[in-house]
Image 1: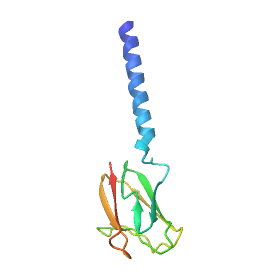
Image 2: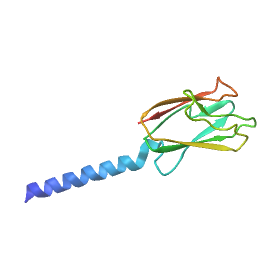
Image 3: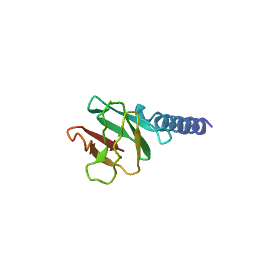
Image 4: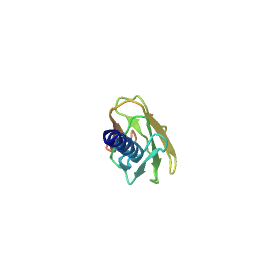
Length: 114
């Protein structure tokens, strides 16, 4: 009886820890809530973002001049974003995705999908 109880408590603990780690997302976002990247002062913030697969990332231009968000491999890109305009992209596969602003190519960022 003791062994059965210990095994049940152990399974419950593993399930609780697993659920907590899935829900926390490491503070970097979840599959249901878009993760925000702010475009301001000629930079992406955060410049490097780590998210789980299935996460939607939303860039918002808070600068007073237009910017874009373009994948280095050109597989996804925003239109030119004026102040307060947004662009979203859902990352479905693990990998590292580098991007830049085509108007200001020295502006770069990276999304790491786990």
